[in-house]
Structure formats: C-alpha cells, structure tokens
Image (cartoon, rainbow, N blue to C red; front, side, top):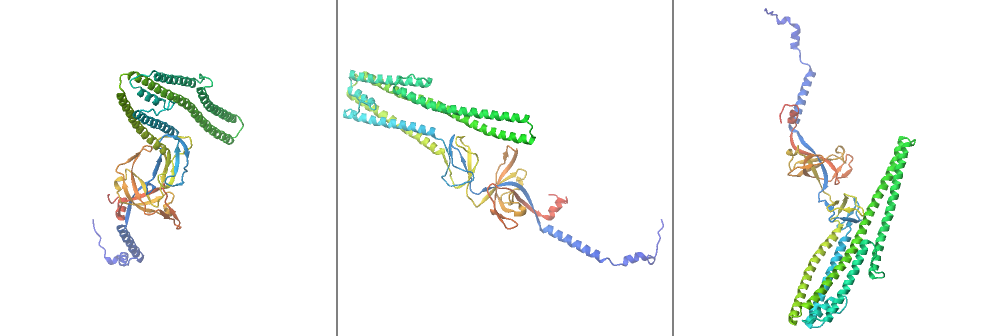
Amino acid sequence: MKFKIDNIENLSDSRQVMESKPNKFIMIFIYILIAVIATFLTWSWFSEKEIIVKVQGIVRPDNEIHSISNILQGEVKSVKMKNGEEIKKGDILFEIDSSELQDKKNQIDEQINYLDKDNKNLEKLNKSINENTNYFENNDEEKEYYYKFKSYEAGNKVSLEEKNNISDSKNELLNEKANLEILSKSISENKNYTEKGSVYSAQYDSYISSREMILNKTEQLKSSKDSLNKEIESNNKEIEGLNSENNTIENLEEKKLVFDEKNKQLNNQVEQIALEIKNNNEQLEKLKSDTIAQIKGNIDKINQSINKLDSNISSLEESVNISKDKNKTTVLAQIEEKMNLNIQKKKELEENKKQIEQSIEKCIVKAPVDGKLNVNINLEQGVVLQTGAMVANIIPDSDTYKVDLMIPTKDIANIKDGEEIKYSFEALPYREYGFLDGKVESISPDSKIDNEKGIAFFVGEGSLNSNSLYSNKGEESFIKPGMMCEARIITRKEKMLYYLLEKIGLKNR
C-alpha cells in the first residue's frame, strides 16, 4: 500500500471549512438545551414525589353511635319513631306488648296478698291463743282459722260438735269441688253439664259467649280470605285470557303488570288475614286453657282446704293425750314457723315481681341519648320482634368527624400511625372541591374477613382537619356521616430524580 501526500495548500475547500466560524443559532440552541437540562436536574433533585396508598373510607361521627336493640322478644304494640327525625334522650321509640308479663305480675300480686292475709290471720290466731279468746268469725273468709282456734281450745278432748262442723264444711267443699270439675269437663267438651240456673252454668255461658265472639271473628276473617283468594284466582284467569287476546306485546305486558301488582296486594292482605286467624285460634286456645287453669286453681285451693280440714280432724283425734300447755306451745310454734315460711316466700315473690317489672320497663324502648335516628328495620304494629334485633342507630349531634378506613392487606406494611392523608369524596369531586387533610390515628392489630366478598382487610381510623370543603366557585359544602371517600395515605416521599430513574429502570428500589 502506497500513501499519497498532498500539500495542504492544494486542499482549498477543507481549509475554508476549518477556518469558518460556527453558526450562532446552533450555539444558542446548545446553551438553551444545557440550561433546560440543568433546570430539570435541579428541579428533580429538590422536588419530592409523594408515594401514596389509596384506600376506601366512610365518614363517622367522632362521638359514639348508639345502637337500639330489642331486649325482650314479643309483639310490637306501638311505634313512635320515624327515620331521620331528631330525638331527645328519654323519647319513646317503640313498645313491646307486655300483657303476658302484666298477667304474671298480677298473679304474683295475688299470691303476695294471700300471704299477707295469711300472716295477718296467723297473728290474729296467735293473739287469740295467748288471750284465750276467739277473734275469728265463722264465715267463708275466717272459717279455717275459726276452727283452728276451736281445735286448740278443745285441748285434749275431741268435740263431736266441732268435728261435725268440720265435716259439714268439708262436704260443702267437696260439693263445690264436684261442681267445678263438672264445669271443667263442660268447657273441655264444649257441652254444658252444669245444673241449669246455677252459678257454674252462668260461668259456662260466659265462657261460651267469649268463645263465640272469637269464632265469629275467625269466620269473618276466613270469609274475607276466601273472597280475596277468589279475586286472586279471577285475576290469574284474566292474565291467562290476555295471552289469547290480540294485544300488542307492550300492551300485554302492561296489563300483566297491573294484575300482578293487584295480586301482590291481595296476597299481602291474605297473609295478614291468615296471621289474624292464627292469632284468634291462639286466643281461643288461651281462653280455654286459662279458664280451665283458673278452675283447676280453685279446685287446688279447695283440695288444700279439704286437706287442712282433714288435718284438723286428725289433729283433734290425735291430740286426746296432749296437755293444754303442750298443745299451746306446739300450736304457737307451728304458727311461728308458718309465718316465717310465708315471709320467706313473700321475699322470693317480690324478687320475681321486681324482675318482671324490670322486664315490663324494658318493653318500652326509649332513646338513651340525643341525636338523629337511623332506622334499620321497618317496624309495624303486630310484628313479632326477636331478642337482640338491631332496630335503629342514634347518630349523635357532632361537629367533628372521623373516617373508618378499610386497608387492604397488601398495603398494610407501608402504613403507620401518624401518616398524612388526603381525602376526596364521591359526593364532592376533588377536581372541583379539592382534598381534605388528615392523619392516620390508629390501625387494628389484626385483619378482618368479609365473608360475602371473600377478602381480608385491616380497619383503620383517620382524623379530619375540617368538616367542610369549598368549590372552585367558593361555595361551602359540609361533610356528613355515612359519606364514602377515597383516602390517599402518604406512606413516604422521595426525590423526583430517583423516582424518574426508577421508572426508566436506571435505579433499583
């Protein structure tokens, strides 16, 4: 290979290029480009990028929301609450029927009155024995104690006359018991076996009258139910007939919807009537069982009286060899023991009565605090409400709110207490209203599982720095409980330069 060497003087064009000056526009462009790059690098170094986690949240009052639940199972007697109304502490919200509890309370009152009366008679008997004077009258109310004193007074002698009197009383009680058993049989078989014109026949007629009233009401309800069912059947035939008529599809569907709506209303009426028929049948059974139970109670009292009379007769016969002093001591000891037993039983009954009264008070559900009512279920008179049913919530009046946060498990590792939050609300778009600031106040130590959606999440609580937002036009809008929002939790900040380098893959995290 040979190299050719030329004189530089002969290279005229290259020399002109070498000696020429650069274009001014190119130099300006280069300087501008360098300035832009320097400005960008300076901005990316000093500015920071917020790394956020987006979670869903719901606004809640800062004060505790009070839940209203039903304490005692029963039928709703009255409803005095309306959804969204302002209520005051102590306002009656609804009432559960307490008639059964009231009946039990009345029965206990009767037993307490009986014990008080019994103790009063025992004290009177004690006084009669100590003063050797019979203060009792030989009547229905004091007959038992009248003969108790006579039994004591007889001492060791069995008085034939007293024994005959006791036997006569026993026969009267046995006759009354037999009549009550006949009355019970009459009610059980719905046939009058009692003696015509007697007190027991009148009691049977009174029961039959009450029974007929319930039966007549039931028959009327059944007749109404049959009429409604016929009307439903007629509507169904009308619907079937529509298919055979020359109707347009749109007209046919419209007519079907009308009949379907009518049938729906009629079915609701049929269900309501069926419930009333069931209640009447239950009322009929209750009338029968209560009447028989009352008769049985009277029979039991008679049996007790008969047993006591038998006991008195036995006592008279067994006390032949007992001295008067010993008899007095024994009788007084028995009186004292019986009085103590009555006092103890009365305490137990009063305790039961107190519990029943507390239950009756719980049947009237009142507002525990002031606030606005949020009804969960539609209560109507006659509806049976179960124990523990959540009826409503009382949202207290408050100017401050918090946000319940639902944090996905995948993001929980980067979130800590005290981190800043920016809230945007569905009802107040952030492009118009901007954001509200706050902080993470707390995070649950364990996750919860939504069984319906099959997802796990942590529950957090966030604060709000304000309860209002302003639009671009300066209009103020207020935050309300229950509003959904998106919470942007700022987990960290990093330089914009590093962030951009990560995005283009020139820097690892």
